[in-house]
Amino acid sequence: MAEEEGTIAGFRVLRRIGGGRRSDVYLGARPAGGEPVAIKVFRSDESEAGRDAELSILTQLSSPALPSFVDVSSIIGGGLCVIVEHLSGPTLAQLIAARRHLADGEIVTLLAPLVVTISQLHGAGFGLGAITPRSVRFTADGRPVITSLHDARSLTGLAPNERNALLRADYGALAAFVDELAGLVERASLPVAELLHAAQVGRPLEDPLPAVERRLFAWAHPTPMLLGASDQDTDPIPARLSSTEPHIVDSEDVNGRMSWVERAAGWADDGPFRLLLERLRTVARNRRRPLIVAGVLAAVASTTLLVTVPTATASRPVDGPAASSATARPATATSGPGATPRPGGTATPDAITLDDPLAAAAALIAARASCLDRASLPCLSGVDEAGSPAAEADAAAIHRSADAVEIAPTVTLTLSGRSGDAVVVSAADTSGDETRTASLLLLRGEAGWRLRDVFVD
Picture (cartoon, one colour):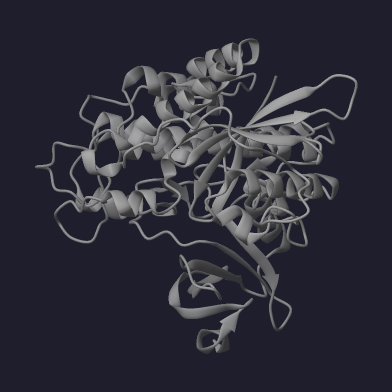
């Protein structure tokens, strides 16, 4: 293929890394450097229904078990390609072949985000179609990702019996997937397969996925995936399948990129930390600013424990909270890195990558307003943290043509607290008769600052 020797959609092609009857997948390099990407080029004879469903899912949904969307582009000859994050870990099939069993906690860490993602797909009007150990691949730090969406279909416009048939097929596919894992667990059986098998044939149709998730977390506490370890392992630590022995991810590697722990916070909202987060948010809204800071940072900390507690080297010292009297600045500053968002709604690179959360907040506020005005979900991928409450709320506002939480561009911003790469920024709008305030939770990852949640006071 000619593109192998040059570029595709502006990305330099390094080599072909996969493909099938529907597409070819290439490893690509970003024009300005950074993490590599996966470039999926659809074949010209690929059905539009399957291709369009996959592209809609990748561009519209933010979910922990879907690859992070980078771009979509047309190519020479009239074809289409989609660029997503490159996943450097093994497939689940490879992990199963390398290990004789998985710990119960690893099963929960594997299945919970998959169950949540399938539920999100159904809620957004899509059926997954199929899921197998070969179609799930891990990131280097242990996040499971569904890589094959070629059987996905839109549920929109289908007759009720057709829609229900596709939903039942998904429950059956997930039940078969769980059955394949049953022989790897330490206990006699997985407690969720029966729920999925019953939903596949039960009348009337009932969604089993919320009950599946609850039963998973009642069955075992989630522990990090141990990739590429032998049966002699005892401590579940993040690792790469680079040898037969565990390779411990050091603190620089974990903190230098967007860890999947932060993304997992999106599905943790519906998992074991849901009640904790709800309580923290209730207290935060009804009490003074210091409790808002403590609550949201505690929520981040509780989620981070999911993967980082097994090794002392997997985290770095956490900075103490910043003084609440930090310098305030208007979001509409006319100078400085946060002054002007990039065309198209993406925040100015300097504003979101530098260690200046106030400038980043100003740029993200302006970019978010532009994205919502244009009802553009791909645009919001450069503003909201993937899989976060902010991303889900903004996406829901666009899908349902509902009102999103509005943050006026004239608000005054104040740094209220900071814990490492998590900060809380206070936004005060004094343009009306009464001062309205909100708190923004920002997280900093490999791509810079992103908005994770908005707490309206």
